[in-house]
Image 1 (cartoon, rainbow, N blue to C red):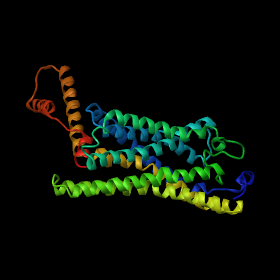
Image 2: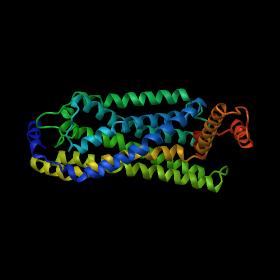
Image 3: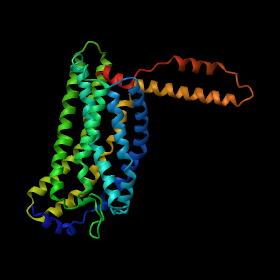
Length: 356
C-alpha cells in the first residue's frame, strides 16, 4: 500500500455510492429505534428489580440494556446524516462524541454478551466451585473494568482527523480510502471484538447445552428450550456481527495488498454499500437481546403482570376516591387486590440460571 501522503492524495478520487444503501439504512435504523428503545427500557427496569433481589446475572443484563440504549440514542443523528447525503452538519465535536458512543457501546455489548455466557457456563459446569466468583460485587467490578477498558481503547477518536469536517471532507468517520491507523484498528476489532467473543459464546453455550442434555433434573421441554436458546444466541450473533466484521477484515487485507491507491479506492467504492448495510445490521442486536435474554422468560411475564395489577389497583383506588362512593369495592377489585398481594414472581435471571 502507498504511503500516508499518497493515501491522503487519493481521497478526492473516492466517491462512494451513498444513495445505494440510504433507503435500507434509514428504514432499518428507524425500525430498530422504534422497537429497541422501549424493549431495552423495559428490560432495564426488569433487570433492576432483579439486582435488588441479589441476582448476579442481572448486573450484566442491566449493563447490556444500558449500553444498547446509549448507542440507540445516537441513531437519530445517523439517520439525519444519511438523509443529508452523508454530510455532517453539527461540527467535529458532535461527530466525535456520537461516533465514540456508538462504536464504544457496540463492543461493550459484545463483551457483555460474553460475560453473560461465561456466567451461565460457570453456574452449570462449576456450580460449587464458582460460588465465590459469582457474586454481584465481582460482576459490578467486571462490568466497570470492561466499560473503562473499551472506553480507553476508543479514546483516540477524539484526536484523529477522521471526525473533522473540511472543505474536502464532510463525512463523519467515513474517510475513504481508509488511513493506515484505521486498517490496523480494523484487524484488532475483528480479532478482539468478534473472533474471540464468537469463540467464547460458541464454547460456553455448547457446554451448557451438553450439560443440560445429560442432566436428569430437567424435563424434555426444559432441555429443548436450553438447546434452542443456545442456538439462537449464536445465530443472532453471527447475523448481526459477522457480516460487518468480515467486511472490516476485507478492507484491511485490501489495504495491505493493494499497491496502487487508485485500485484500492475502486475497491473501497465497491464495498461501501455492503459495509454501510452491515454496519446498520449490527444495531439489530439491540432489539434481539432483550427478547433472547429477558422478555421471553416465563417469569418476566409474571413480573410484568404483577406490575400491571399493581398499576390497575392503584388506578382503581384513585378513581373511586373521586367518586360518590369512595369506599365501595366490587368483587373483581377484591380479587385483583388479593392476587396482587399474594402473587410472587421469581426473578427473570433466576430462570436463566436454573435452566442452564
